[in-house]
Amino acid sequence: MTQDPVSLDYAGPVALIGLDRPDKRNAISDTLLAALEARLVEAQQRARAIVVFGHGPCFCAGLDLSEHRSRTAEEVFHHSRGWHRVFRTLREGPVPAIAAVHGACVGGGLELAAACHIRVADTTAVFALPEGTRGIFVGGGATVHVARLLGAARMTDMMLTGRTLDAVAAERVGLVTYVEPAGEALVRAREVAARVAEAAPLTVMGVLQALPRIQDMAESDGLFVESLVAALAQTAPEAERRLAAFLEKRAPKAIRPQEPGE
Image (cartoon, rainbow, N blue to C red):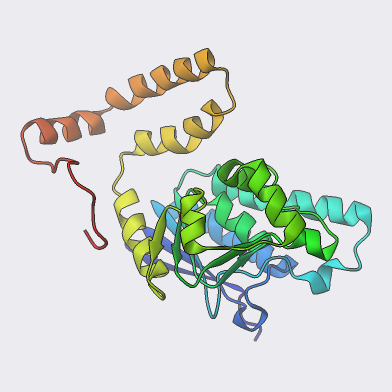
């Protein structure tokens, strides 16, 4: 029996989606991409947070080039659009997603990580966009989503020179949010996901659906949408309950940085 290239498990309200082609460094084949889409749709119906990670030695080494080299221009175009569709399911879906990155996070793997809402890396992580050195171009959304995280100038450098970023550099430029010791990315990502799963539903909706769109709006339009979302969220029964807990000193104050595991 052929092994499923994407695993799906649950830890309470958190779905754990694992790329599972360790012998191919989790390179994204057509079969893996289809399995990832199916697992995402399933997890979004049940979970309140998702962790995406890689089995084996790395997160994801990118596009499976063995399938790509014989495609025509038309086939490459439609293949790229398929990646956009799957990653949009992740990025624009109703459930926050956290990428747990170790080892190589290269090309399409970086595009997958960028489609997640939060990225956790351990000190073994290496980020690269080697398409320029391969004579090809990114096709999984990097020109929009990776460039927004890194800036177009830094992405240009990475693509034209083959420059890589380690976890510390990736955090410095805003590509990742957490850096953990070797072997601890998944542990920390699960902790983050458990906390995210506790967020109020309307707050989650605002962060996932309104915030990215506001970045593309004129200032006045963005502030208008912000006010609408604030009105919806703050008048919900869940907000009333949580605000009462805070005012009655039954909820913790955000007064100091939180340490791992808290």
